[in-house]
Length: 301
Length: 336
Image 1 (tube, rainbow over the protein chains, first blue to last red):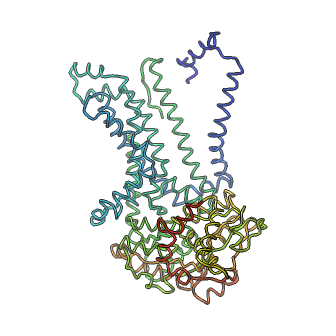
Image 2: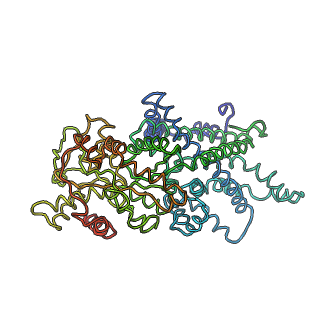
C-alpha cells in the first residue's frame, strides 16, 4: 500500500542519496544502521519475545487455560470497562481543552496548558495516593462517602478515576499543536458565511483534526489498559473484583504461576502491538489526502 | 462512529457483568490477608464454602486480597471493606483498631490462642548443597554472605525475621542489648535487596537468584521448595527462633453493616476445627490443635522457640522501640 505511492520521505531520501555533497560513506551508513538495529533488538524485541516464549513454554493448552480462568476473565472485563469509561471522557475533555486553547484567547490560558501536562510529571503512585487521601476512609470525603454508602477507592470508580488522571493529557496534547498550526482562518470563514458555532465545530474543526484525534485516543487507550502504578494503589487487590490485567500479571507471578503470568502479560503485549499497527494505519491514512487528493472510502481498523 | 458503537457495546457488556456480580454479593466474604497465605486460603476457602453450604444451605463466595501485612492493614484503615483480616502480626490488627476504629481494642481475646489459629517460625532457605555452610544465625553476619529479607517497615514477615535475629543475639550466653544491636546491624549490612513483602523476597531469592540465604517464614520456605523444586533449595532451621503468631479477626464495622457477622465468625472458627487445622498443616503452618500438630510433627524440624511477649514485652513495645520512625531499625539503617 505505502510502497505504491512515493511519499515525500522516500523522495527526499533519494535526493540526498543522489547528491554527492549530502551522501555519507557506505560504512557510516552501515555502522549507524547496525547500532540502531542492535539496540532495537536487544532492548525492545528481545524482551518482547521473551514474554511470548515464556507464555507458550508449557504449550497452547496451558496458555488458553490461563486466559479463560475466571479471575483472568474478570480482569479482562474490568480492564475493558475502565478503558471504556476513561477513554471517552478524556476524548471529550481533550477536544474541549484543545479547542479552547488553540482557537480562543483567555486569561489563564498558559496556566491551563501547563496544568494539562501535570499527570505526565506526577508519579502514578502519587496519583493513586491522592485519591486515597481524598476518598479513603481517613481522607477528606471518606466519612461522608461511608455514611452514604458510596464506594470509590478499592472499587471500580477509584480505578476509573486513577486511570482518567494518568491518561488525561494524551488527547489534548495530540490536538493542541495540530489545532494551533491550523490557525483560525477556516473557522472564521465559516462563521462569516453564517455557520453557527456548533456547525463550525462539526463541519470544519473536527474533520481537520480527526486523524490526530484518533491517534490521541489510541495512545490514551493503550495507557489506560496498561496502567499499573496508580491503579495498584487504589485497587485493594481483591481477586476477581478489582484486579486489572497488569495487576493480575503481578499476582500470578507472585504465586509462582509463571506460565499464566506471562500468558496474561502476552495479552497486554499483543494489545500494544495492535495499538502500534492501528497507529501506523492512522498515520498512513492521515497522510493520504496530501497525495491521493480526497479522503473517501472506509474508516481504517 | 463505529468507535462509539463499540464503546457502547462494551459498556453494556461491562454493566451486565457488574450487575450480575452485585446480585451474588450478599453471600460474599472478603478476606484481607498477608503475602504467603495465598495457597493456604485457596484450600481453606473451598473447604469452608462446602462446610457452610452443608450447615446453612447458603452459598458463600470468599474473595481474597494479598499483600504485605502492613500495607494490607493500611488499606483496611483507608476503607477496603474486609469482613475478616488474617494478617502476619498482631500489631497490624492493633492499627486497624486504633487508627481505623473498626474493631474493639481487645480483639485478640475474642478467639483462642491469642486469636492465632496456626503458628509458624522463621527459618533459612539456602541453595542446594548449602555452599556457604549456613547453620545458624551467626553464619548470617559473616562477611561475604548475602542475605535476602524484606523491609521491616512494610512487611510483617520481615519484622519477625528481625526480632528472631535480635532475640537470638540477646539470648547468647554473653548477650545484651548493645551486642544484639550490633549483631542485627551487621546482619542488615549483608542485605542487598529489601523487598516490600515476603513473597517479593522469595521471588528475588529463588527466581532472580540473588543472595546466599533467604530468611523466611517456615511455611514460605517449605512452599518455595515444593513449588520450585526440592533439588534446588535446602531448608536450614536455626538453633533458636521466634514463635510467630499470625492472628485473625472479624472486622466488626464491616460485617455489622453488611449483616455478615454470622458467616464471618463461622469462617474464623472453622480455622480452629480439625479440618481447618489439617489444611493449615498441609500448607506448612504449625497447627495449634495438639492432635493435628502431632500428625504433622515429622514435617518440621525441632527448634527452641521464644515468644515476642517474653523477649520484647509484646508487639506494641517492640514496634515502638524497633520499627517506628527513628526507632532502632532506622538507626541501624542509617549506619550503612
